[in-house]
Image (cartoon, rainbow, N blue to C red; front, side, top):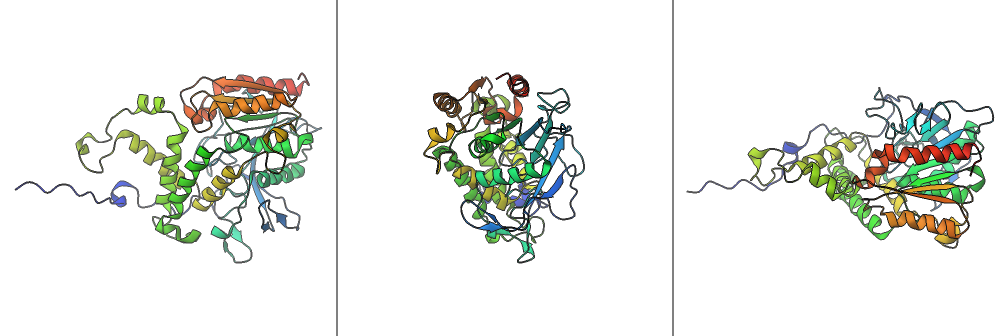
Length: 404
């Protein structure tokens, strides 16, 4: 008699830790690290672009360097989808990872904190200290959850503007960011052209394209179809019983789009994670183990509801909305712009940044365009600091000296 074939039944408990939290959001009582918190509303409701209001908004932010007496040396850093305010600095209590742009921000680096006062804040709708779905709703005494309203890039930038006002910053020397951060950069230029002296949007687009929307839509579906999502009310769930599977799968889908086939092939090829289980129905290749690692890592530091809100805000991004179209909106950018592409980026392909450059120049603006030759895919804007550093440094120095 032949041996019974191995079962194809998938058992998550045999593949993943059982202690994955219901949320990785910063919750009351958690270590806050270098974050500072500021309430930026003044008792009046904050009306959102798409409808709805928030009555109190707190912004988590971090700063590096010192603000000049005339507040002329301030640089705003805008983070991407799952980023937060910890753009620079080491691992510490409240900061399980090194700052996501640590190679670019610091003493003597491209964004030199001996020279500039650098600010990075967690976006509205985020989960690392700024008001978002995991924040307590004063009307109910429980986290907002799925009742948190949808926000847009313009809402995020308006909140950053309120923070700037309270920090005493009248005009940024530059606003800098990649991917979703670049969307915020562009909105700063369109919304507050007199509040910025330069703009540095990297690996981004003037409006989200259909392929970008398609990927993020599938990522969101993976979250809301997780039975443990529970309509967005999962914050009281014990470890292992929150929507970790949906969030993890969403992150794994995204991770595939962040890198290039060349990098995956070179790093993993067809190697098996455990050669002994090569023919088991759920034996993993090394690439699967890599994706699982990144998925679990995100679950421990992010929130499923925030992912839904912020991801949708990216899809809604269109700098031309209500402004007569993209060309007209980019015509508002009356300060020097540096944009850059990652040559192997298939999520935000180089043609989108080339279009940014061409539209700005056609409207009479000033734009420098760099192509970063890298196999790293979209994540190149986070990884290629040696190539991105020089044009960023040069742009900041020229603006500082009014040599533009």
